[in-house]
Image 1 (tube, one colour):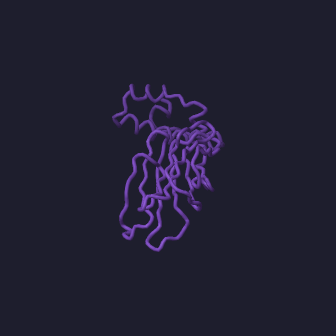
Image 2 (tube, helix red, strand yellow):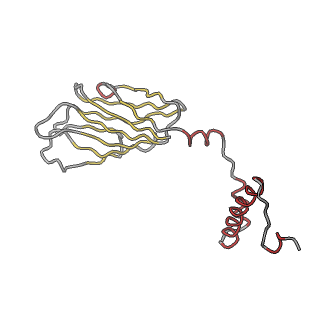
Image 3 (cartoon, rainbow, N blue to C red):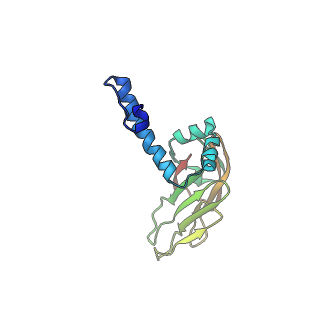
Length: 183
């Protein structure tokens, strides 16, 4: 009887035999795992039917983009950030760089183009632990005294980046922000 059927394969010493031996061990372990688990033929059929598009594969190879918002938050308007892909979500960190003796305003937000959320601290608040949540903006740097304030959110996304709409209340420059755009 052939050695294959008795479970005692006989291999030669040439490189092709070594390749077969190493891969047979891997395939046997994989087969044992699948046959002894709850994986059914229907599961394997579903797995086989999954087809990844070139865009999905490319998306997995994209490195997240980190960038500086520059002076975007100083004035009202729609500002465009150019990337090499459409981000799935963007994380924002923003602040007013002007020093305040009673506390500085800052914001950390998340935006996927449809859901805009951030946690923020108001300028001029004496209690540094007084944090607020906004479910309307992904960037929100307010003053306790109402002005100046900055609000922003992603208003559009496309294959080459995203646009943020900035609303400015009061005249103030020195707002700083950075973003992390995830593929």
